[in-house]
Image 1 (cartoon, rainbow, N blue to C red):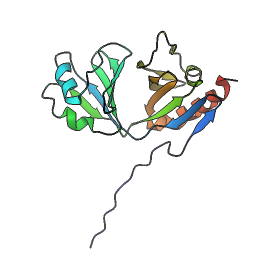
Image 2: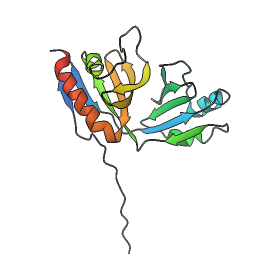
Image 3: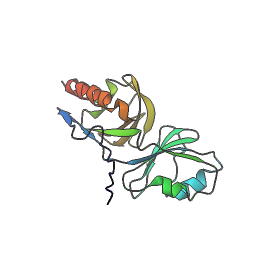
Image 4: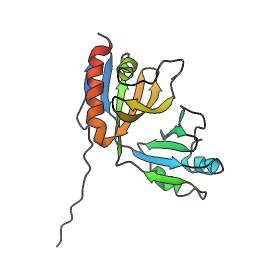
Length: 184
């Protein structure tokens, strides 16, 4: 009888944690991610399929009751993050023109939490993350150090940093070093 092997993807930051006074860094749990593009005429149907209203304002995000998150990246572009469901299956139900690409294999995320989260992120990012311009729910594609990231403010002192898997070690190390200095 033939034996079958099944590949299991190792999470790039599995087991890594870092903390300093007032800030903790932890890898986010694995999630399904979709890069979504849709024109204005398709937004309503795509939103219905995803069971959330896609955000239409710059630098915003929306989360539904089941935890699915949609992040506005451009006038017709969103990042969908779901730790429990499969957005691709739901998007297949939308019978309107749209483009949905599964990027779960490409991205990972780092959770930056605590009183020192914002100064830690700002040490490597030119984006103003202050309360007045980046409130809870705000999201933005920007740079951190030398890499592109998407930063989502998930709470008063909580941020999610989405980055490519291949840059995750760099991002985690950069944030770990910044955390050491943020409240010193």
